[in-house]
Amino acid sequence: MGGVGRRRESGGDARARDTLVEERLPHARDAEFGRKIAVAIFAMFGALTRFAAGVLTRIPTGVLLVVGAIVALIGTLLVSASRAVPVAFSGLALTAIGTSVLFPTLLSRATRGAPADRRGRVTSAVATTAYLGFLFGPVYVGVLSGAVGLREAMVGVAALAAAFALLAPLVTRGSTTTKRRIVTMAS
Image (cartoon, rainbow, N blue to C red; front, side):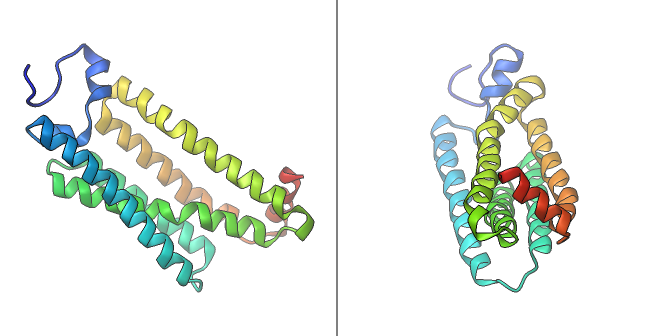
């Protein structure tokens, strides 16, 4: 149906190819520009937050992980529910702010209790786990969006952020048992 609005294709294919920006912008040129702006917003807010978090070393690890996950959860839900581009971009910025602190904080927490001779293995175990998420995350969103639509898939991403927020205190409690498990897994 021309270059305006959503593409008309069969069921899941159309939903999988739609993007949140395309749904909100009337012209293909605007949608392409919107996608570029969305990537820039995510990258900028993610980088600024990482730099700021590096300076704010007094925030306890558990608090930083839970707050980061909750901010990512709110941002992802905002992206999913928004009907206006500025609101979607605000949600994307919140998502970047929340997620940008998770990996470095987890890595720092995991290596803090590891003996010097095993610190490399612990780093490798945490990085491998994180990169598996990086690898399978887009697949998760793609399969989910093909089945239920991109908006609903973003709610699925929010559910993962909620699960992370609930599980983070268990991992960062500081128990000796948890530290031993991390070091043992890396051995």
